[in-house]
Length: 239
Image 1 (tube, rainbow, N blue to C red):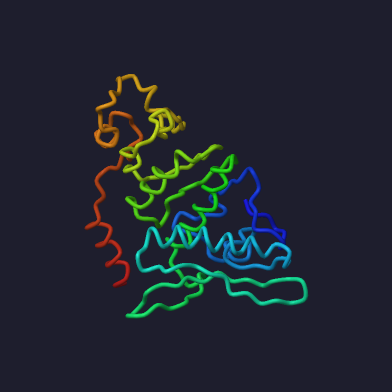
Image 2: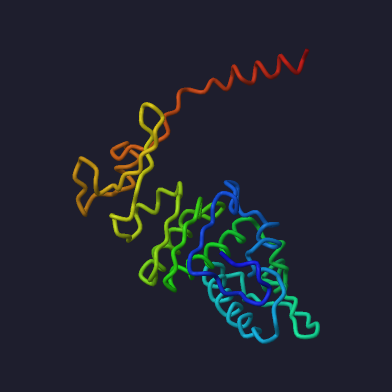
């Protein structure tokens, strides 16, 4: 991931984003700002200022493409001796006019999009990336479009977990789709859908087959008696 050094925006060639970095309910904003990830704010040498210009160009192209209200992104910079303190800002159309807003004030989904973009670019440059819940707080259709369009550009490898079944309908190599199964004794098993006992034809809709239980991995949930739970809670509160 992005290193702790303050003089570079460049990622390492192997990046891992575990549940420690991305919680199940979205991006941990404090970690994104104060931890090892440097795209949002930080400090760097003026000798590397061209990296900020490149980041502005990439982030502006990406976010303006997925949101018509976004005009672009830029860095607010303060110079001290040979260093630059920088903060990422988004220029977007709000309440009838374009406004410049600190990226730190954006939603969890927008944070997650920036994080995912950075790691996808690492994979495009030949790195190996592992993401847990990569699409957390991102719309299913948007994440599907992003993955589908960037997949041909990936020169390295990206491995990510997701609950977004729409990715099964994306134009991706079927050998790259795995389902996490839980066996009777609680043991976990990961199985590629191409290894399933029932043959999958190219005309088959993988998502429909999965949702109908052909590949396993579906939640096995008994009936939840919410009426009884609420009644018990109400009785307890009345005591």
